[in-house]
Each structure stands twice: as structure tokens, then as C-alpha cells.
Amino acid sequence: MKTLQWMLRRELWEHKGSLFWAPVVVAAILLIVTAGSAGYGLLAHGAHFTAMVDGRQFYMSSFRAMPAEMQVAAVQFAANSYLASAVPLFIMMAFTVFFYCLSALYDERRDRSVLFWKSLPMSDHMTVLSKVLTAAVVAPAITIAAALVLSLALLIIMGVYLALNGVNLFGALLATPALYLSPLFLIGMLPVYALWAMPTIGWLLMVSSWAKSKVFLWAVGVPIIALVIVKWVDFLVTGNQGMNSGLAHVAREVVNRGLGGLVPGIWFAFSDHTVAMRPGEHGVELGQVFAQSWMTLAAPGVWIGAVAGLAMIVVAIRMRRWRDEG
Amino acid sequence: MNPAINAVVSARGLTKRYGKQVALNGVDFDIPAGRIVGLIGPNGSGKTTTLKAALGLIPFEGSLTVLGHDPRSERDALMQEVCFIADVAILPRWLKVGDAIDFVAGVHPRFDRKKAERYLAITKLTPGMKVRAMSKGMIVQLHLALVMAIDAKLLVLDEPTLGLDIMYRKQFYQNLLEDYFDENKTIIITTHQVEEVEHILTDLMFIREGKIVLAATMDEVGERYTEVMVQADKVAAANALSPIDQRTVFGKSVMLFDGVARSQLATLGETRNPSVADLFVATMKGSYA
Image 1 (cartoon, helix red, strand yellow):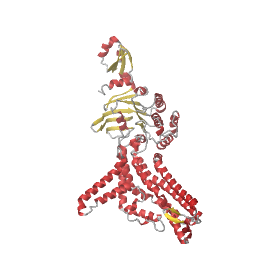
Image 2: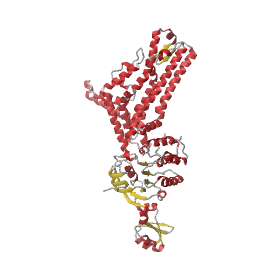
Image 3: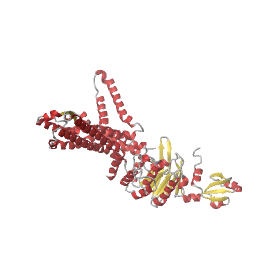
Image 4: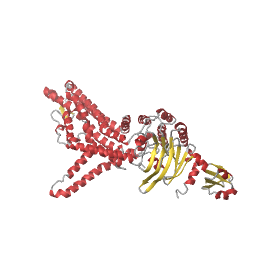
């Protein structure tokens, strides 16, 4: 257990830039830009201008003129969907974790440092496990933390801004349960994320442990070329009759799940539960998103994918165990 | 087929093929505890393959036991008691000196942090320094400091001092002998700089084309091999004893004999123990032919 902790720490040392600094820096930039434009707007235009907050346009003068119940609705909207402002962080995470997995077992072979790690009492399955945990849990947890800080800061900026315009929403906001529940819903989706990410993590780690060079080409090129071939065969066999053998559909599904699993919320692309993603008049209700995310686990596909992912992780472990580094 | 009970490493019919090429061809040997063994051979003779097999880094045929473990199936248990330097300058570039010490202290139960810090104190390395910013020699210094601070029962060093200057090399072997080695430990070293290790070795193993051609203690080597500076008038007599090698130094013949009594050779000229390097050259003759 202690060894595993050190191995996780090692992953963070090595990938501090992409796993830690990237979300922190992007969050800081978003914050500065928002705070800056709000401040600039206040200085340049006084109270009468429009602001984009969380993708919604607020007309300052009209806001004050709003009836009370509409103001309540606006508060509800903000409390429900303030975390949406951190969406860029989660999109970025999909990329950083993708490239993290690709390099996880490849870089150590390329610079031969694998021989140093193997000279210490750390088994291959522990090593690969530490990389799986980094991709599926540690990196999302760091991003969630950065997202929470960013979203709350943006919410405060918005509140202060409105307050300076004579509309104090803080009291109403603090009394809204959604404000406190949203972070819990976000954290609560982590297991769903890990399960959906497993096929992609497994595939990338397997390629990473196997490829002699050009890991990215192998990891992305092979599935795409395979998909094109399947579609072509499918077209030759059934195209003329206008029928669909289903093979191309299955192949596309496999490739999408295998390569796209690291994108948070990808599960909605594979299910009918897309209602919650459409912002209603109360904004994106994270509670709905949370519930429907967990409901995607009722379909067998995610479990098949997770098992396939674990199988590929086992292959990666064996590959690391026996690969002769020359 | 009964490996010596107290052997730290015991090989029987150890064979490794890379495709059609045979890297190790049915090698047998035993290394008892408390020895410092020099595994010496030309490039491509199977030295590194032997070490990799013993460390569980590659699959092989035949039987090989290291500290009672089969390196193929029990590598994780083995690595609790074994440490190795398989190649120089292979520390990851992002690693900091301080982090490296923390990490090894965290994962290795036999690591002595104070010892590692003592070794590092005599170098120019500082805790905040990254491997990226180090010279090759400095990387080796860090690696050696980490490994020497691990109280392993078996230490395997494959060319440990490549890239180090002579001062540090001498220092390293001195430390290895005085500070690290004791009767419960076993060290296996391969190196090309034979002269630098021969005074610390207790055993010698020559390997050639995947076969062990000589395995003996240094004492046995001293008894078995004699180098004679043959007097000019005794050359014919000396040749009759079939030397395994001869060369000329300042016009005098220097011959190397295997298994000829030293008292007999003393009549031919001045006798002495051959250097490991000379013995190696004589034994490996024709390896590059």
C-alpha cells in the first residue's frame, strides 16, 4: 500500500505539467479573463451593459427590473449550472490523460529507465495499476478540484458584479441547496467515468507497452484503418442491396468506446439519456446528469467495455514483465 | 543436477536463444555466498544475457536459481533481496536527487537513507538537481549512491562505472569493498576495465560465445596460471611446455602457462601471477577471428 502511494507520487512528479499545472493554469486564465472583463465592463460602461455569465446573457438594467420570482429562477439557474464554467478543464483533461496513457509504458522503455524501476521491489502489476489509477482517479480528481475552485470563484465574481449593480444575490444563492449538492454530484460521477474510461485506458496502455515507436499512430491509426476496412467490406457486401449487416455499426461502436472513453460524459453518446444535458430554464441540473450517468451503467455495453479494458491492462502487465529491453 | 545448497546463484543448462542465434549455450555454474565474482567476456559473449536471466528480465531455458527463487516465476520475491545496475545513465530525466532518495526510501525496505546521503555528500549533486541537468558521470554517481545504500543479498553490476573518471571509479570500488561488501553479500560485476576490479574479485568467470570457459577462485587462478619472463637461452625449453600465450616485452619472451608447476617454471626465468587482463586475452584468443 505504501509502495503504491509512492508510485502514484512518482507519476505526479513525472507528469506534474500535464496533470497538475495544465488545469491550474487554464483555470487561472479563465478566471483572470472573466474577472478582467467584468472589471473592465464596470469601469468602462458603468452599470448599463450586458454580460455573458455561464453562457447566459444578463441585461443588467432588465435584471433589476425583473420580477422577484424571475430573479429567484436566475439564482436557481446559477446554483445549478455554475460548474458548467469548468467544462474547458474537463475537455482538456480528456486530452492530457489520453497522452499520459500513451506515454505511460512507452517513455520508460524509450529512455531505458524501466531498468531502474525494475531494479526496485515494485512488481509489474503494481506499476501498471499505479498508472491506471493515475488516469482513472488521480487526474480526474485534480481536475475536479480545479473545476470547483474555478466555478466558485466565477460565481463569486458574478455575485460581486451583480451586487455592485445593486442586485445582491448572495443570500439567495447561499440558501439554494443545489449550490452545495453540485460538487457532490460531480465527485459522485467519478466511478461512472472510471468505468467508461477503462476500455480506452486499457487500449492505450497496451499500445504503450507494446509499440516500438510511433505510439500515437498505432493507438489511433490502427482502429481507424480497421474501421474504414470494415465499412468498405460492409459496403461491398451489403451496400448494393441497401442493407446493413450491423458489422460496421458494431465496429464503430467499439472504436468510439475504445478511443473516446476518456471524454467526460461520453456515456450520453451511447445511451438515450440525453435529456439532462440540454439546459432547461433551471440550467443544467447536475442532479439529473448525475442520476442519468449512473443509469447508463444498466446497459451491458459499459461492462463489456470495462472487462475488455481490464483484459488489455493484463496484457500490458505481461508485456512489461517480459519485454526484453536489449 | 543438485544445485549447491548454499549457492546464491546456481545455473544448470542455462540456455537463451534469440531467434536462431544462441546467446547462452547450456551454461552451468554456481556462485556461493560472500563472493565478488567478475563475469568477464568479449562483447556479445553472453555476459549481459546471463545477468538478465538471473534478474528475471528475460525468459530462458534450463534451470536457474537465484537466492532460492526461480527468476521467471518469483521475480517479485527476488527483488526484495537483489539489486542491480543494468546500464549506466538510465535514470529518468525528470527525477530530482531529493525525490529519488525519498522514493527509494519509500519503496525499498532495505534502503539506508543516511548511507545514500553520505555517498552523495562527496559529489557535487544537490537535492534539487534534476537528472536532466546532470552530466553522465553525475547520473552514475546518483545511481551508485542509491544502489550502494540498499542492503541487498545479491548485487549485480553490469558495467557500473562506464563514463566515470578514474578518481571516482577507484573511490567506488574502494567503497564497494570496504563499506558495502561483507560475508553475507554477493556481488557480480561485469566490466571492460578488468585492471580496476581484479584486486577486489574473489572469483573469476570467463564467458565466451555463450559458454563458461573458466570459473575459478582467484587463488585457484594464481595456482593454475603462471607467467614467466623466459631467459633467452631457455625459450626452446619453455616452448616444449606448451605455453597458452606468449608475447615479447623489451625483447624478452613472456609466456603464460596453464597447470605447469611453478617450481619447474622458475628454472626458465622470473615467474609471477598473470594479470586478469593478460589471462583474458590468452583465453579469448580467436574470439574476434
